[in-house]
Image 1 (cartoon, rainbow, N blue to C red):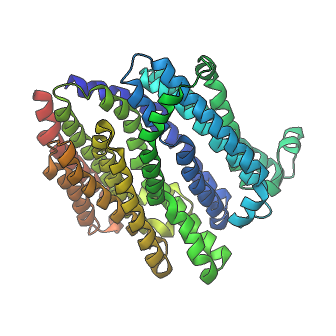
Image 2 (cartoon, one colour; image 1 turned 180 degrees about the vertical axis):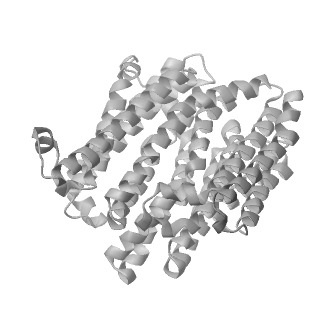
Image 3 (cartoon, rainbow, N blue to C red; image 1 turned 90 degrees about the vertical axis):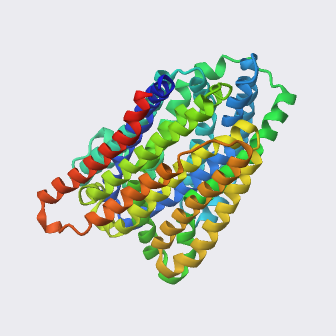
Amino acid sequence: MNTLKKLAGQTAIYGLSSVIGRILNYLLVPLYTRVFSTEQYGVVTEMYAYVAFLIIILTYGMETAFFRFSSQTEEKSKVYSTTLISIVATSFLFIVFAALFSQSIADWLRYPNHSEYVTWFAIIVGLDALSAIPLAKLREQNRATTFATVNLINIAVNIGLNLFFLVYCKNVYEAGEPNWLVDTFYNPEIGVGYVFISNLVASITKCALLLPWMLNIKLHIDRALLRKMILYASPLLIAGLAGMINETIDRIMIKRLLIDSLGEKATMEQLGIYGACYKISIIITIFIQAFRYAAEPFFFAHHSQSDSKESYATIMNFFVATCSVIFLSIMLFIDVVIQFIGPEFREGVTVVPILLMANLCLGIYFNLSIWYKLTGLTRFGAYIAIAGAAITIVLNYLWIPWIGYLGSAWATLICYAFIAIVSYFIGQKYYPIKYDIPKIIGYPAGAALLYYFSTFISSDMGMFNHVINGVILGAFISFIYMIDIRKTAIK
């Protein structure tokens, strides 16, 4: 229980920057979905889908490799400097390449008049990849408060600039009362570009804050160590890319598969609606991210303890229970939650429960995947992710032309459920852990059934409807407490 309390405490601190920070960032979604049209928000959705792929490529599994090799040696500074120098070199080359060929890349993306988007995002992605290693160092040293501070400042800068450009400057300009500040910094023709500019300045700020951890290293790269790290990380890179296909390829494929039949405007509108509703479903992912920041170094650090496997199984129970509560909380009060996005975007609400359950399955997979990271059998992570990616691509290809973004949502759920199941069975062969399968399946299934039954309650009942749903949620939480949390605490 003490071990669980320690992990919970660190998750809470990391959650300060991850959960609170992501929530603050999500508060921009109501702004975007009211300032921009569905078509304009589609541009934002598509561009950030590409960013997700590029971050995986530019970090190429070295973050996890850093934890692995640093935990196995006393020469931690050598592992850190080797990792950081490698990432600096590749990030610099990427930024230069993207800047030189920005127009060609913009033409391929079908934004021929906005080659500046390519340059801006190249710098954003390069700096974010570079920042990942000092942030990993802070996590390794359990400096969760410093980690949280850096990320919160980054988020504050991003939000502040978005509000400055899209609220203050835009309103002053449209009111016909310009001043020197608006005249200097605002051009209405930039439009959604201000979302990207705000992100760019925030990434530069984060990198600047981490400079003390970047400059305080020996300028030496251990080539033998680097080869070992890359050998370990390469399957993680493949797994990461395949995993990102599972997570974001749908937003890219929607545009590519629908643009000829629906036209560019209608396609970008569909993409914008799907992207906005996807934001609601990622609330579970916020918790997963906070958990991941604390859990990954925790799993490696406790690998050698005699009760490690029992701890991993118990952690899984708590994780699934928490995600199930989040799912049920959102869906029981979806009529309130959907107000988060603009009226034009709410027609996509049907994908929210599907995507929430999909992200829950993804979280289960993350917990299960620790077996191949601890054993060094990272190639299995690549195999599983590639199989999932194949399912995602095939199902999206078949279903998007048929049922649009709803097909993408179902493809995501099927993929994540598949990789979780496969990872469990393979993991039991190489690193057996006695997970409580009835609870892992039962909690999400119970949450889904309770939501289903709640849909039969008349929506005309108004506030009384919310009271009933609150009782349902309270009963579910009490049930989990009695059969799991209370028993674990007693032990």
